Length: 309
Ligand code: CP
Image (cartoon, rainbow, N blue to C red):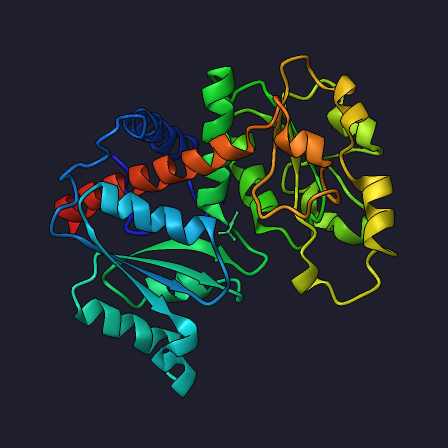
C-alpha cells in the first residue's frame, strides 16, 4: 500500500511506490475500456481542483477520475475566487479542509507551493505541476503509456528533447524512469539545458541523432513561451530547424519506437505534424493513461487515508 498522505513529486518516491502506482493504473486503464465507467470506490469522498495556471489535460482528467470512481468534485476558478481578494494559499487550503475535502489537486507557478499546502491541510494534496519543479502525474502517465506498449520500463531508452530548463515534466520523468531502470537521454540548446541535469541522472547527448539512437521512446517537450524571457534561442523557426524532432530522425530510433509529448504541443516546433498524428505517436494514449493514473492515485491515497488518518 502507498504509505503517504500526499503526492508531491517523484524525487521523493521509491521505485516500489512508483511500480505500485503503475500496477494500479494498468488496472484502471482496462477499466476505462468498460463502457459503463462507473465505480462506487470513492463514494462519499470529495476532490477539489485548485489551479493557479491554465490546464486542459491535468485538471479535466483529475475531475473525470474522481467522477468515474464516484467521488464529488469541484473546481475553484482561481481567477474569480477569494484568492483575488488577497487570501493566502494556506488560508485557502484551511477553508477547503473545513469543507471536509479529501483531495486537493493544485497547480501553482511557484515551486514548492503544493508542499506548503500539504503541510497545512488534512486533505491529501496532489501536485498538478509546480513551477519548474515537478509534474509527477504527467511522468506517471508517460511511464504508463510506455509500459502499455513495451510491457516494462526497465531497460528502455527514452530520449527527451526540448525545453528541459523550464520543464517540470522532464524532471519528474527523469526521476521516475531512472528509478525503474530506464536510461534517459536529453538534448536541447545549451540555454535550455540546466547544468545539474546530469547530476540528477540524465545522459546529455551531443546531437539529436545521438539522443534518438536506439531509443524506445522519443519525447518532444513544449517550448514554454510563457516562461521564456528572451534570448534563449533566436527564433521558433530556428529552434524547430536545429532542435525539433523531424520525421527523418526516427530512423535512428528502434523500429517499434514511439513518439510522446505531454501536450499542449506547438505543432511544427517540437514535433512535425506527421509525427504528432502518425502511427508511432502515443500522444492520445498518454491522455487516456492520464485518467487511469489519476484514478489509481485517488484509490491508493484513499486507502492510506482510511487506514492512517
Ligand atoms: N501536460 C499537461 O500538464 O497539460 P495541461 O497543461 O493541459 O494540464
